[in-house]
Length: 166
Image (cartoon, rainbow, N blue to C red; front, side, top):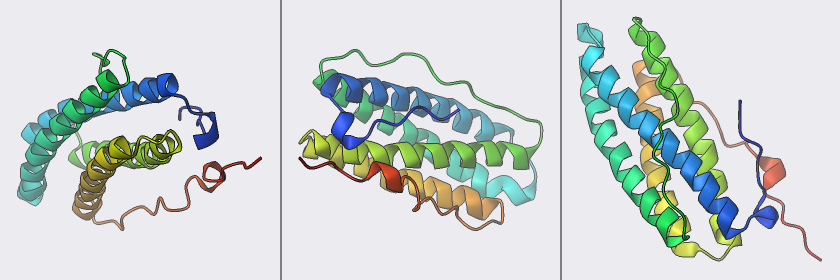
């Protein structure tokens, strides 16, 4: 179930740190998922994506380190628990789990950029933008491996972009 969204005009530093900790738990989930999936995918049709997943695992670790530093910067302790990792004996299902997770991560990081900027944390927003670039590359890799179009997440969340004036 998606987390309740916090709009830019409702955000404070403590809430941002909480949300970043949730993102950090998702990064841990991604590290574990990519490590496992990269090793258990079998069949010639999955060799290229298995090698990509190993690279993704390292990139997710880099993301976790960046988020941990930002959470510490906000005066909070980084999370230590991963979100649950879904597994399957079916390779296509595993890739689908990964794609769903990447879609959620992309939606959340897009919101985090807006929240950081609302707080004037422009350097932090830039760090998250750089993570977002890699997450979107992961999304492309996974959709391509599944033989699908990349999901269009651009319509989300229009309702959260308005900033009240007054």
